[in-house]
Image (cartoon, rainbow, N blue to C red; front, top):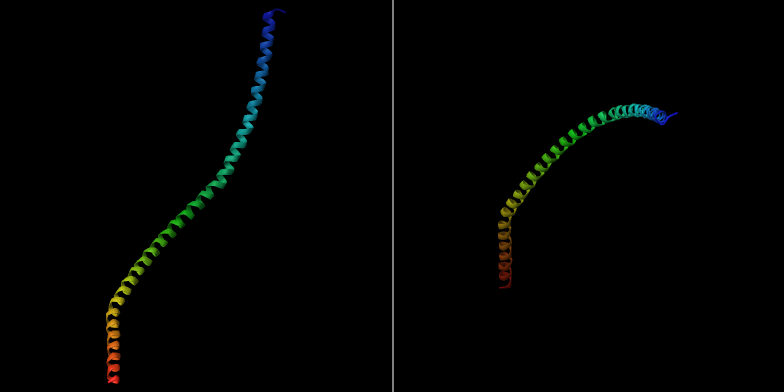
Amino acid sequence: MSALELLTVIISVLALLAAMVLAILCFRLRGLAVDLAAAVEAFEAEAIPAAEQLRIVAESAVHDVARVEALLDLSESIGTRVDSATDATYRALTSPIIKGVAIASGTRRAAGRLRGS
């Protein structure tokens, strides 16, 4: 057997081994691709309903936030009206009360002087 024939046999054996390794890798990759496809289908089966439910909850939250904003605006308006009413009541009652207290004080002094004389 010559060196060229020996080299040809060695290269042929190496090529056959490489082909077998590549074939095994292809079968394993195919199995992984099938598993990956099944995982993707399972994920889609879970993710699509979850995303739809999340969208519904988000829309409900937006509606609730709008209601809360309306209630806050209403409470601010009521607070402003109460402040205005309190201020008006204070202004309306302060002067007459002060005058009434002054009249009562004056009447007491006058009564005291009339009794004392």
